[in-house]
Length: 243
Ligand SMILES: Nc1ncnc2c1ncn2[C@@H]1O[C@H](COP(=O)(O)OP(=O)(O)OP(=O)(O)O)[C@@H](O)[C@H]1O
Ligand SMILES: [Mg+2]
Image (cartoon, rainbow, N blue to C red; front, top):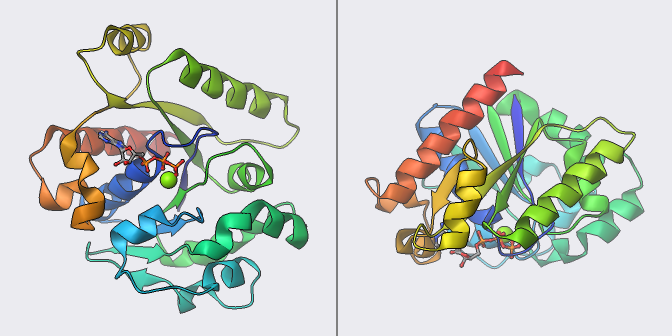
């Protein structure tokens, strides 16, 4: 089983977008039974992929082991893709992990889900905190979306250095350029400086995900952005095979 965390300490860089579309690719292209676990109290993945019903505090109850994850896991309209939804109770996720006070709590919860899925994707909230430490202790691989800019590179280096200095073992971390606009010289320069880094283009098809309530590949199968998500998934799968 592979757990892929889509993580960045920065907000608004394309984490949810990557999480939803990679989950789609994992389920449809590779035929892996896939779970997208929305760990962000903003519940954006949940909004895109679920039926839109009003939710209570079940996401917190799952983390506190008051109810099993299977009680709230639901299928999505993508065959083979299930969603473990978020709700507002995760806005205090750091505090929840502090109160639970178990180093590898998220990893243990994921081990239980392991038997049911070939791939689990975590849509993480922004930050570098207790929650990120839990995520890093649980993931087999971290993808960090990055808008090509000096500040994004700095954020990536900060996380990389944090992991390198940490006593705990950490999974490999791979940057992914997101919202790339080839007309901008700063973006072109960042791509030239990092030729191996996967690229997701800026595209209006991507912006429409929340209106379609679906991954881009579902309503725009031939869009360049869909090709980019598929290419990224192939790179990720090759990386998982090398583990
Ligand atoms: N490749 C893209 N092309 C166009 N718009 C994009 C692209 N990627 C993301 N966006 C848009 O940018 C905004 C932020 O993206 P997203 O929600 O995925 O970021 P995030 O990192 O998950 O944010 P947060 O930190 O708030 O969780 C959204 O409106 C999304 O539709
Ligand atoms: Mg998000």
